[in-house]
Image (cartoon, rainbow, N blue to C red; front, side):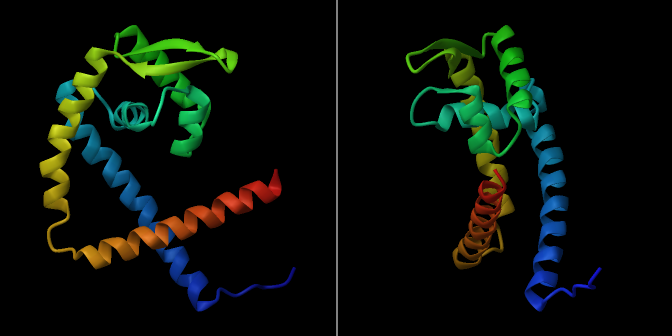
Length: 156
C-alpha cells in the first residue's frame, strides 16, 4: 500500500473538519439548552425549522435530504411531533404513501418562540466577527458540501 501524504490543503481541511465536528457538538448542546424550556431539543428544532422554512409542504424524505440526515431519524421526530399536535400530515398529490408534513398553528407558534430565543443568542455569538469573515466561512462550507454531494452522486 502506497503511503499517501496530505497536501497542505488536505492537512488544513482535515483540521477544519475536526473543528466543525467539535463545533457541531457544541452547537447541539447549546441549542438543547436554549430551547429546553420549550420542550424541544436541537434535533426537533432543526426539523421544525426545515418544515417552517420550506417553500411548500414536503415529505419527510425531502426534509431529510435537505438537512443531510437519515430519513428514519426525521421520520421518528416527525411522528413524535405529530403526537403532540406540532405537525400534521397532508395528502401528497405526487405520491400515495409519502405524505406532506406541515406545521400546525401550535407548531408555528413553538417555532416562532424558539426563533425569538435564537435571535439574541446568535447576535451575541456573531460579536467580533466581520461580515466578510462570516461570508468566507460560509463559502468554504458550501464548497465542501458541494464536493461531498458530488462524491456521493458518483458512488450511487
